[in-house]
Length: 69
Image (cartoon, rainbow, N blue to C red; front, side, top):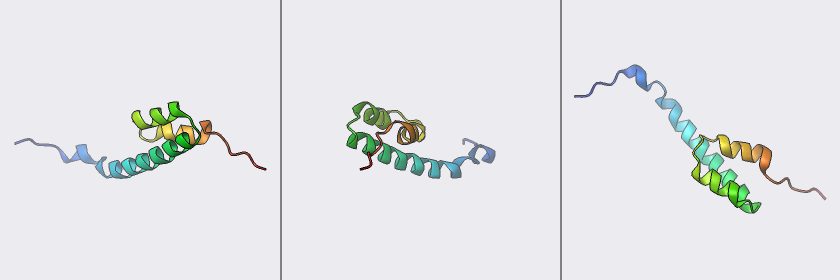
């Protein structure tokens, strides 16, 4: 039988929030990229798994800003 020491799994409770945050950022970043007609960013956010870093960078720095009247 395989024996896995308990100290290897201290990070597991951090995994679930990280996955949820990554999913939320991917949805928001992909939606904004699609709405702004930026197919490169849409495909990059969809394919590249960066634990939320790439969508966050897009949302904060590279999306088109709305023009105020």
